[in-house]
Length: 260
Ligand SMILES: [Zn+2]
Image 1 (cartoon, rainbow, N blue to C red):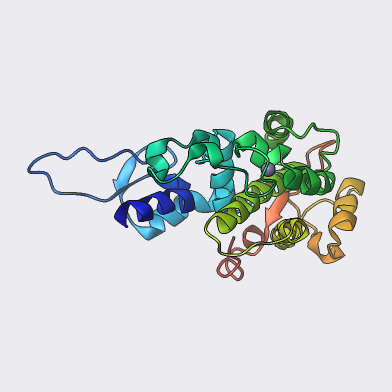
Image 2: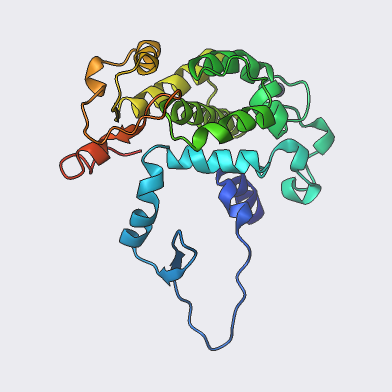
């Protein structure tokens, strides 16, 4: 029973696989510390954690971003990475099949890009992120996004949001099916991805009224009120404009409750 729970927790919270067992030092009391962005360890407080993540979290959905980091590093416990001790003696690894297509073992490449579910929905998502011409392979999509991300443009932020939301939702749906907690249709999974990203984008404020931004507004059916006049407009020539999360535009009144 205990081991079964441990296996299930590994699937439900992949971050557990990344944690090394602690080294115990006799005579020294445990101490809870937090590593801040500059690498220092400081005594743990909630406010310290919040201060250290909120700037980078404003333009992403943290749980999606973390899951994407695991995907890019091929660290999720997909079926091709399972070993016998991961599943117990009663499970035959040779019989495992992708929970969406039932054709082969699932792997990072298969699950997020090659499986019929991902291919079908991915076409729609890539079109929304203006990534239609990018081959449906993780390395190609990441190679496309990395240079874009340096500019922090609207296109880059939205593309990242779409990729991260897709990977998170596919992984979540795969685990829901695995643990028999329900099953969504392909259409529903990708409808939800679009809704999640839309809800995030509508919390931004655009500071440049360019044709590119108006095209984004049309694509996502956003109201014109998301464009604000700003004396600190930081447009990125040829790449769109800089986005401001609502919390940055109105830091005191709207900071709380915007969520991720
Ligand atoms: Zn499949």
